[in-house]
Image 1 (tube, rainbow, N blue to C red):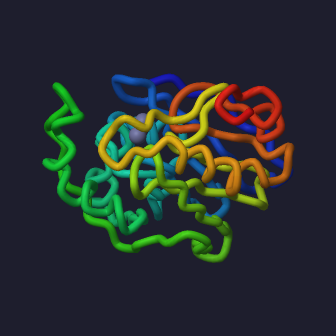
Image 2: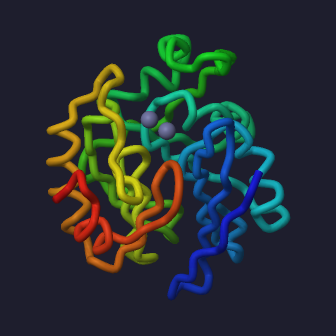
Length: 222
Ligand SMILES: [Zn+2]
Ligand SMILES: [Zn+2]
């Protein structure tokens, strides 16, 4: 596990840190309110549970996992958090794959030992998730990589978690079941590129970027 730098935000009480986890370098995003001893996790790849012990303050609890989508590499440790009482959120169309991972093991290769993770809350486009009064997360449904892909925009922290929809200089692959390239590109343009230009983009894999950089130089969007 490698922890990337803390993002600097204007909010001193809430910190974001990202751990690189799992066999294909997934970003697990931890948003922690140290005062409340609570954290929210964006995606739960293999290794995220172990990483949480190093990253979070002692006694901090992951109160919620927000799944960007139901691909195997984003959910391997979901059940480990669930067993300690974490509440889980996912889009209706990908909930099935997180609760029944045997349906996605065909994509998982040797990582076929996925354990089901129950989803407590189905999320729809434009939902706002409020985490115990200290964090508001705006949900944007962007299908085309997976059918139930969500981006999570956190206005108060100036960042958006894009899962496998938008990467630095790239977009998600659309050749998997549920994929559709033109739908993905139009969704990214309408629902991500319209965010404030200095919004930090934290993708499901790879380096951080910003909305303005992608708007100006991402070859798939120009
Ligand atoms: Zn994916
Ligand atoms: Zn992925």
